Length: 338
Image 1 (cartoon, one colour):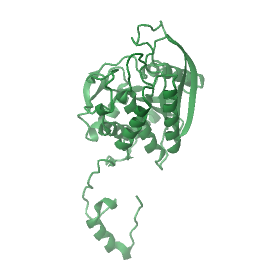
Image 2 (tube, helix red, strand yellow):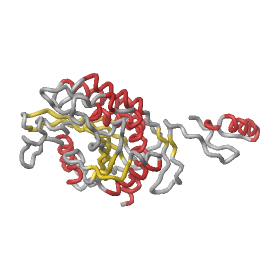
Image 3 (cartoon, rainbow, N blue to C red):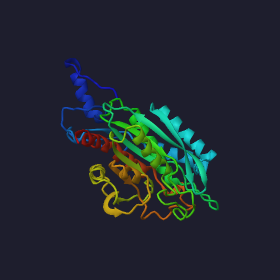
Image 4 (cartoon, rainbow, N blue to C red):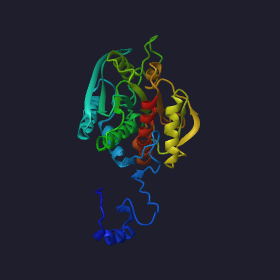
């Protein structure tokens, strides 16, 4: 939206315009509140180290379209042509939005043999090299006798993360911290029984996130990786996000308080959410503050063939996208002063 500067000669025109078109101007003679557009929310909190105004332009329909593209591909287990097609789509979208994209390929030893896995990383450089990660896995659970397309797990979180990338990639103001969007491969167990065929000290899941943490350690980046926001199963049309009991409290508090301030208090609720074996655990074990946004309890379609697109909604993805984007300046301010 272009800025309009007034001069004495044009003042009468501006006053009339402010009366007729209040949405087009940021200031009017009368100090009246602006109407709220559900697609673009503006924080009215005072600018401070812990609360920085941020215009949110997250589009839930765009996120839903990313989900449709994934589901059109079909089931997307690791080391398959379908996941390669998905990966190419993710990479293309991140590049279109101006992110610097890299991939991290590795071979994982699994109970069903060696698998080539590839993490995807999109970066938005900040004023400092402090890293804040926003992540999702992008592989679907492997089943031999069931067609599982994973609309919510992980279609919705991938679609939401891609739309977050579009917003961040098209924001003119440089963020205080550097953001990395990370798409993990191999989050799902490759054994149908999830952990029945896992090996001691080598669980059959979270392959990509465990490898990424090892890479942070090898590159000397653990110390500057200050927070992880994990998205997983957060697109259900009856969305209700409880507090994962493993997540870091200060990080969780910022997101829940931000969600409530945006009017999403019925979504970000104060109940416990028990989660085990998710991608934030390797980060927590490495000392990186992490939060998991997930609805496992109360989602009856988890790892079932009817985890289909009719179970999720663009609005649920927008709620999460709005809240994460509005939380980022507060999270950055917290890590930069700590």
